[in-house]
Image 1: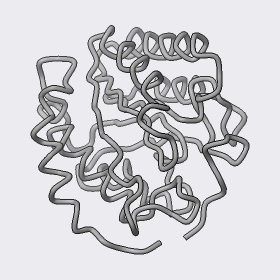
Image 2: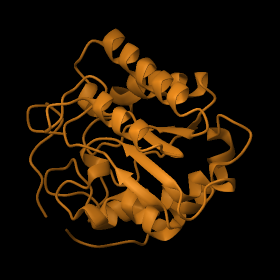
Image 3: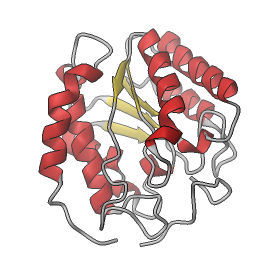
Length: 226
């Protein structure tokens, strides 16, 4: 999420407080079954050494932190995944990121790397763009992943944001969810584990601190059944 977007600002700083993680993880486990778009849980077939690609924006890239502190990296380190975190700040399915590309470039790289598990999220960077254009771009990306990586697990998840409300994000989340389920993928509702929580969000009110990233990682692991 870059400053050019109304929901984002430049990233800074970090404090700590992880008392809510146990509760977050427990709640996520209780709802995990309802998120699965296919009968098999993701965790039942993921394994150490698996090639995992993450397609996302500044939340997944860990803007303001070290790359190793972003939630996908935290999960990968624990699970022994061979992670390609392709996420780029400012990017979306239509929105161009700091590298000048939208998510289609990340999709290309995931396919070229023969990912076995692809995690792909909605993004608040697409808010303000034409809704039909965003939906079409989502469908195109998910169909490409499904057709060119037929043996891969495709897992979609909701947009994570410190500033955008659930109502703001409802349409982009719903569109990506449908696109993922249409190809037999799995949908994860991660909620908003860090939004508005003291110590879990950076001074820009948008990006998670390290404890915030850890909170997301805990929910993601529970939802993935890891």
